[in-house]
Length: 158
Image (tube, rainbow, N blue to C red; front, side):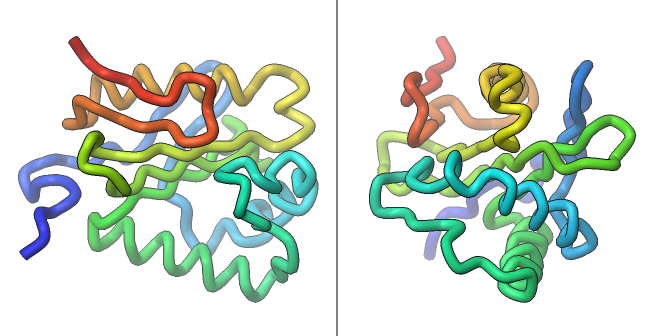
């Protein structure tokens, strides 16, 4: 039997709030704002999660709704955790953070994240990356985390 991604005793954080943004569970209710963020950032997103990834090429609003439903269900099942990155007033989706089971035994989790292209130019993605690393260190049970596509590939707690 596979080991659960996180223990039943672990209370999954509902949100992370920072000075510029809020992370909260990504749901189907975010489809329009999420789709806008993805479509306005296609050049930035292509290949971000690996050279073979063509996402978001060909993404439609309907397909995005299906994807968000899948992410929401996996969050509820505690098998992966997708967070939307929202402006504090919730008017604009600024990106996403995905916390997945690892693809290698060397890690306990893989984290992928992105910021909307317009915000990337303002340095949001690096701020988001640092905030997420700190959050995982302080509030999550993982010791070894991989950040595929990042300059800093691993985060190891001492």
